[in-house]
Figure (cartoon, rainbow, N blue to C red):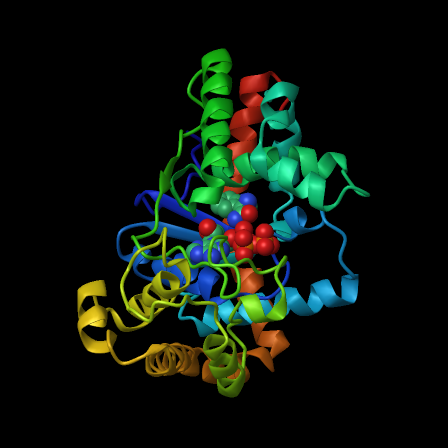
Length: 338
Ligand code: ATP
Ligand code: LTN
């Protein structure tokens, strides 16, 4: 380990979200909210992965707006910059530097098997760029740069985490212990939120029709309308059964995640009362959960200078740790010290 390794000895947690689309209650209930308590036991790092986001085309003015919006939402959701390192990927050049090195330790065949690549390549057939293909290598660099032990992500990212472990182990075998081999940290049960119109598929921030997702900044009336129109079924029972009643089960998951109630309690309270009554309760719970976030957002988003100050501070901490890793890697590779 380098002599300028940081003083905080707690294990590192690291995660990130791409500034694509708009943050949904899936991102909040499945990711950001679960990040909040981790700083009690871990040295937590949360990023906005803007370098990843350019693998899909987006208007730069729109991207800039999204980046500010996402960072303001991180803060509004309760991520305290005094207790967590909050930063933007492009502010730390070491991500791109390490990604190149790791590209040379990743096989073409391995990247060809990534299901996210196959999905995104099919969706963006006119722009299957090398960045989209090498996306998991940049993600491995994000994680290995900070010696992260735990990476909280949803199921969809498991395959990328496995590849990160493979790359780290391969490098360590060739050059001696250089990287910490990270583990996935899975969110609690019930934190996988499905689409309101397509409850068989996860609610997604960038691919969905407006009515399929509840966005963190949706107004209460809009939230109520979307939940009222959510797909259910014909039998009228409020019962958790993902296979046969995916719509009702998803609404139950949302309600449980917002209120902390168990599925048994929800069934007892709402079964027999009709879907209209149940949906009203779900909408009220979502609105009440988002209200404080929306209020804080309105205060925070207006002050871009303060947001940039937070990011400068986060980048300084991240850069210090990342630079130490790059030095270690370059030494392991036999590069002349700069
Ligand atoms: P995109 O549509 O841009 O691919 P996404 O909505 O799938 O985005 P990501 O940026 O891929 O979001 O994921 C950010 C984090 O939110 C990840 O940890 C992911 O597991 C989590 N997440 C995303 N969607 C959901 C969901 N519907 N339910 C629970 N967690 C989710
Ligand atoms: N690929 C992830 C986002 C991501 C990430 C990371 C998550 C990029 N770098 C590092 C955890 C750790 C996604 O699509 N959700």
